[in-house]
Amino acid sequence: AAGVIQSPRHLIKEKRETATLKCYPIPRHDTVYWYQQGPGQDPQFLISFYEKMQSDKGSIPDRFSAQQFSDYHSELNMSSLELGDSALYFCASSSSREGTLGQYFGPGTRLTVT
Amino acid sequence: AQSVTQLGSHVSVSEGALVLLRCNYSSSVPPYLFWYVQYPNQGLQLLLKYTSAATLVKGINGFEAEFKKSETSFHLTKPSAHMSDAAEYFCAVNTRDDKIIFGKGTRLHILP
Image (cartoon, rainbow over all chains, first blue to last red; front, side):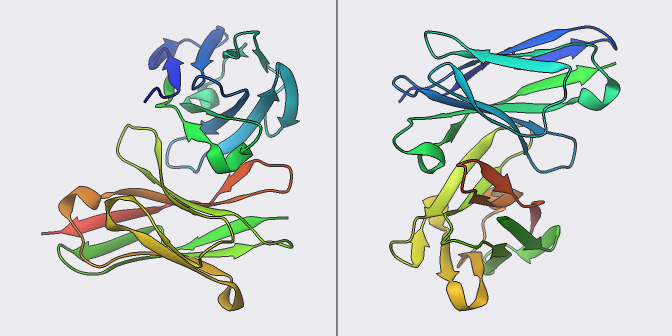
C-alpha cells in the first residue's frame, strides 16, 4: 500500500539558509500534519492543513511557513535557519473523515543545520 | 488539556521476559490513545490505538495495551521480548482539536 512520502530524506544546510521540505500524502488523504522531533525529544506538532487551508497551528516558529497544494501535497518552508532547527521533521496524512485516528506518518526528513 | 506521561525514559528487559511500558493520560473527555514505535533513524509506526471500543487493544508485533479509566492508564505490554523490539516507544493522545500529543518516550533495551 502507498505510504506518506517525504523528500528529501536528509538535508544539510548552513545557518541563515532556507530549506523546503515536501510531503506527499497517501492517495485520497486530504489532511496533512507536520511535526518536529528534536534530538532525544518527542515529536511536537507544528501545523496542519485540510483541503489546502490551515486547520491548526502549534509551536511553529514565525520563520517557518507551510502550505498545501491542489494535489494535497504540502511543503514546509524554513527560513533563516538556526542550529536549533536541526531535527527530524515528520509529515503525517489522514482523511478528514478519520482525522488523527487514521493518521499515517512518513519516514521523516532529517535536517541538519551547521 | 490532554496529555500523556510515560514513566521511565529507559526500560531494560531480558530477551524472553515480559515487556511493560507505562503510560498515564490526562484528559477531560474520553480520549483516543496511541502507542507508536520508532526504530533508530526511522519514522513513527503505529503499534495500536484505543478508540473507546474494547478496553484491551491488540496491536502489531505481539504488543497489546489495556485502557483503564479508573487508573487513567494505557500501559503497553508484550509477553516475551525479542531483540528486535529494541526501540523508542511513544504513548500519545489526541486533542479535542484533533492533533496528537506525544509523551516523552521510553527507550526499550533488550538484554541478551
